[in-house]
Amino acid sequence: MILKQLRSETAQQHAAIEKQLPLLDSTLTPVAYCQLVTRFWGYYAPLEAQLEHIYPIGFDGKERLKTPLLERDLQNLGQSQAAFLHCTTLPPLTDLPQVLGCLYVIEGATLGGQVISRQLQATLGLTCDSGAAFFSGYGALTGIRWRAFCNFLTETAAPLDQDTTIIASANATFETLSKWLGKTP
Image (tube, rainbow, N blue to C red; front, side, top):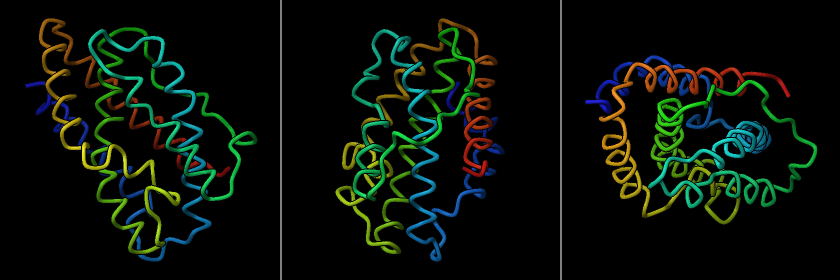
């Protein structure tokens, strides 16, 4: 039930962020793409640093970190993350329901990245090894890992009886990410 609620009650935020990003636009330039990867790194690096200390028991979070993929992309794109800004307005992550809501967005983005990675290859010639590792996610394992996460979320959320908090956290994650990506560096 929580998955249906999350999908339904975050649909507006999800659609808004997709509309905001030119990743599926055939006119996306390498410079604009590099700026977007920089912005994603600026959000994911502090978010994952915070999450690393509070991953729920049974969740393979350290194996799912996206920051190393973004750093690899930046290196392949000729950028150094040392000078980039970090997002300071992250979603609150003080309890398990909030963490679950945030992880729903992060893992869902990995699933959606599969479509983006194909577009990046078609428009910019980028692959997992040349600047699109973040959007390639887990490669062939993405679907399997998404289903595993959905099972984990469902099983973990049921006894908590905090669906409202989980959904609010997912929306807060979409909102803070959207605001961060919309800022001019």
